Image (cartoon, rainbow, N blue to C red; front, side, top):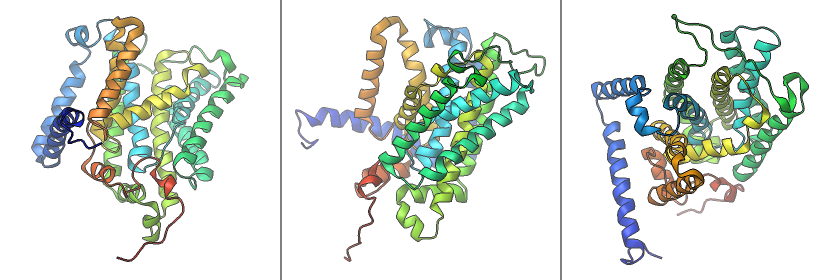
Length: 374
């Protein structure tokens, strides 16, 4: 039915256009902003990150939960995970439903090497990231010939394999998990014990590093190759882009950031178990990426923040808070199906029905069809 129908499609269309117009103007302003304007925004965001744990902000943002703890987990953890998954889904266009596996590998690496072998914290951070990246390569090497739904099913299975393996491996605690995981060492006179504030600032540092790394990649030759693969993998292959190599690199880098999130999280919670890494966590991070605007880093960060914050903000509604949270997500996606802050290129791709950029769209075109001459 046409959106021009004044009784049915009209109001929804007008609201959708209003929401789209606001976010598009913000995006376009940012695209044309000068250097000093961008640095001004960066400075403002940094100030907000520094003052965010203040009780005055927390009393409004999280009246039912400790705000500082919430800033570290789930908000900070979700943002870091979403940045990593955005490289796989947003930049390379690969649907990954088992991303929680890399989060688990990072967490268990810290627990195993510090508890069983007495490794120091910071060297183990590097080990955990390396193990997660290797796991990304191990997963990607035999599966990246697949596309769309088939790739999603394989990655989902990989996530479950990692969780079940952890459950049945006594060396890492089995179903009972591992406890007494060491905290980060004292830095600059700050002790990392039970106070969540130092962990929050440490997470902010990690998020900033991940953002800088992701932006530099996006603007490089690697980022341009990912864009070509996402738009049309067959065309990219014909133009000489080694698609398999770049898709494997996307999996490895996304896994590396997921492993970093796992290490940071496990260093705070002290105890981990296989039940901490369910499939629903992968689905939640994927929802954050799509809600914010797949492929656009600011949008992904906003989406992860909302996904983590809204259920806690509505905690006062008891069992109804999940219903309200779900309704809010449905309304957002009805009014803004391409995400809250999609990139201009991504919006154009999704608006073009002939594009293979939409998730799963390549399934219908898995068999190469001859191009008709015009």
